[in-house]
Length: 350
Image 1: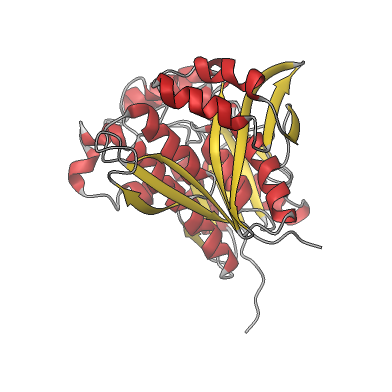
Image 2 (image 1 turned 120 degrees about the vertical axis):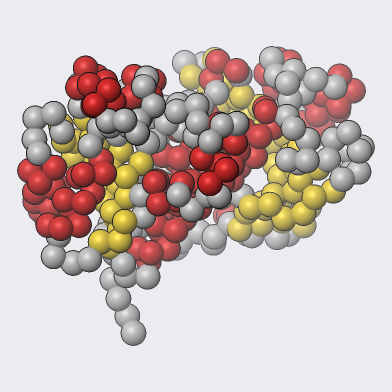
């Protein structure tokens, strides 16, 4: 039995912006059934102890960034939404896109699907009054999220202001828009980048070494760092630059005709969370697909080691489609347990 992909409506806005009421209004208004697969549904799947500090901080307790558990949960949410759509089910979901990797992941997962991104706006003073009036909200959360929640979205399909319109009026605007306009917010997002990406090229050690030296949290062992630098000279490497200034690089090591590895990647600290890594990885993956590579792996520090920096690294790779494959407790020594993550590279469309 064949079916068309279900429509996705993703509502993005701060806490107290009115997303929950808008979602309910959409479910009431739309003729076809829309499943609620929003962020609260996934949060409330967690054991109750994770909804209170200190465990809540590892989910979304800091309001403007997720912990490692949160990254896994919300990556699962994005994948579930895409799966529901491909099963022919319509989905409406509220979100707080405070992590740039989440926007990137949605763009990749929703590629080819009728997915609309709706910005839910509201003046800060109204948000803060709503927080005070509602007894179940954390004071200050809306202010903390106010700029960040929209910062990583280049364009919306539609924006609504819940201080000017009722949930029902906003729902009617969204309904009219999706009836009369194709989705555009996610289209091309995964491929777009303001950075100049060059490569693959050999012999880039001299360019990559200064970048590695700015990352002592990840490359703090001098012997290992020097080995990376020397080996980069022999590996196909991509370089990301802006206005001629190198910002990051990625070097690939091929292990077989079907498999390759991200040998090392580095991005200047001031360019973190700005899409540099995504742009590098996208270009490298496109090249590897053309070469017939089916699997791309990366090794990183396992969660068995409580390192905050590497928790973000694992979350980044998870958002980029990598999945944990195997742990090697002694590969890098007992003090540095290794996790191998792998990604299936789809064959290029012809």
